Every structure is written in C-alpha cells, then in structure tokens.
Length: 110
Image (cartoon, rainbow, N blue to C red):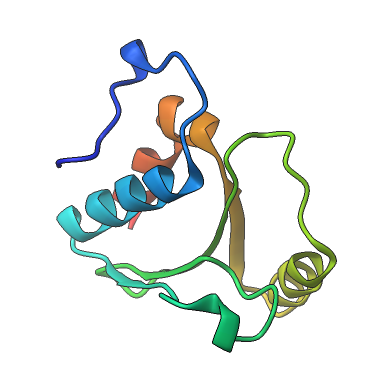
C-alpha cells in the first residue's frame, strides 16, 4: 500500500484525503467494493464520504474526519441519523481510528 501510514511514525495530523486513500487501499486489498464521490459539488450535501461493500455483503457508510474533535456539518448529521434509523452501519472514522487498528479490525470482520 503506497500511502499507508505506520502508527509508530504518525507524529502530526495528516489530511483527510490521505486517510481516505489509506482506507480505500486497505478495503480493496481485503476485497471490499468501494464507492466515493469524486466531485461532491454535484452530489447531495452531507452524503457519507465512502460506501463500502464487503465480500460477505456487509455495507458500511463512512464519514471521514481528520481528527476526533471534528464535528459533522448539519447535512452530515441528518444523513448519519437517518442511515442509523434505517438500520444501516454508519461510522465516523478519523486518524485515531486508523492508528488504533479500528479500521483494519472492522474491515477484516466481514
């Protein structure tokens, strides 16, 4: 994986784009299908950054944020609440999710 960040050497907050690239590479490596909108300016406001479909049909809706303190915009909050109310698996992932191994564990569970 070309953009993977080693947790031992992560010393600063990296851009959300780098987190997205890491998640996408890992997901594809683990045989997940990945959808993300390349140009969100033509898409509904607040839709999650990634939709992941696992090898055994698990669907994850992922909102990525650079750090744990980042709040959801109102439109993102509406999407998260409605997806959760519909019984969907919606999650907010940050660099902490990456360095803690949460993302890898989640993707390997499917």
